Image: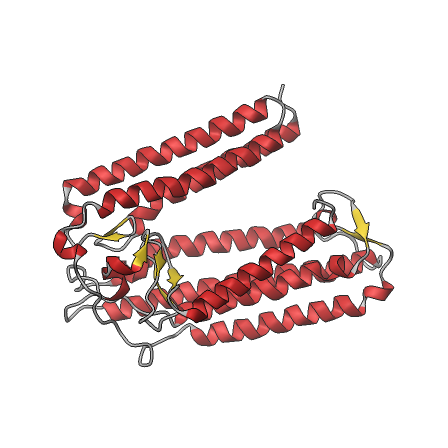
Length: 378
């Protein structure tokens, strides 16, 4: 008989598999017209019989990936190791999903007509004269996040000497236990440090998205430019909102941990979980709204231009690695529209984009390692 803890673990694992599977099934269906699995095949690509076969292959592949993940995870769990089954099944899901995409990308690439495969990149709107409506809010959000993160770090530092030898852990704060840990400067500043990295990062992403390069459709009399600006603004606001949610979550957590440690307040588990739930609903609703109202790149708003060919990076197969990584040293853009899925991606031909990603990944890896060392995992 499966105990309650194992049932909860397996329930979350199953939900995770079906959630990821649903996202995988939806992603190719929100791409711009002419794009399939990261490859530009021309504007009439979706009308070819081969496009239907590609999509059916993708659907079958997603079902297989989900099935294998569930079989592995549940198989290990039923042998008496639910946590290992959860982690292993999730690892299988994360490993097979990119492999499935690469397989589909290669199949789509072979279907590109010779004329499309040989085309050169066409000019797009310049950044200097481009309209941006989301950057002011993004700048405001960036300043707020930096000030709040610095203030919580300063408060934690100033409170350090007054804290007892044992302080509550994060599990303690959200009501999942009563564990405490030895007081150390790392343990006290860990949450403010994550806040100082994550919330400004989301705000910076909002700013970069608001100023991202447009990938317009050709022709006259359409609304391609206006549609792209509307999409970028909405997507930028999504990142700004996420930055504020993350900032509130980590700031409240940091302050609460100190106050609980000093006996000035009780656990704020309900409040913190409430913030997490609100953030998840906000992200989910915003993404659904982007897909339903705008479409990728504002495709649903491109009235009068939908039959015209794409321009810019999206119409140039030569500068994309596996259809997801854009590399063009001659393009000054930091971000361009993604070819697969929803949103934008970095131009990895720009040294600034490479530096930003390297700094962020190195910092996050360092914080994760410190966390594991602090709590005795490493």
